Length: 270
Image (tube, rainbow, N blue to C red; front, side):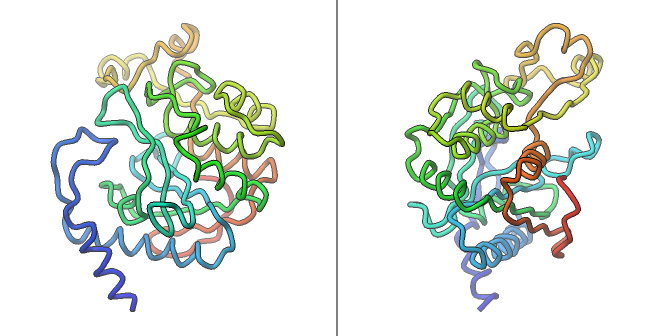
């Protein structure tokens, strides 16, 4: 049965071409990478089916962030019984390296097929009341989606002018945690800060910005004040900062993580 499911997943995802989030050149993933993504997707589905929860947070390793001490670079909400399928990932993606973004609904195989560094995986389940409210909100999208289409990879947390994938996650989570629904991005981030969310500080030296070619359409340092740009210490919303927030604030119900295909004990956020 497991082999059959992997074969079906492989067949469904074989014609993989340009995803949002890269430069949109047509490309087809090697069968081995598609098979690895299918195996990770099956692993995730098995764990999700064991928990009676309508939504969870699922994280992947798309970029090597080890120089910043980080593991997971991207995350999304995996929604049960979504219009697109039993377990569908809803997440924000940069569109082809431009300054724009969109909200996407993808199957788990596609989510783990996006030319990742590895197939490590972490799933975080929310407390039941939060999960219920968040799932309802996600099922209603794009209505009340708290999406700002102007993308900035290094968006300042709470920025009115820019948003990235992790900032969107925090704002959506806050909108579900609050006792009353929040339909404004600024109010959502303010609630998260008041509830204990703290962004991470990422150091980007000026020389790296200039010589490292970081001036691209999807990166805008001017979203941050001059003092931040001079110091090179940028506050950003990372996947780890989201994990830490949920854990500290008591919003986490359960966590599972796999490294190199093996289920691990979870000592803390990564």
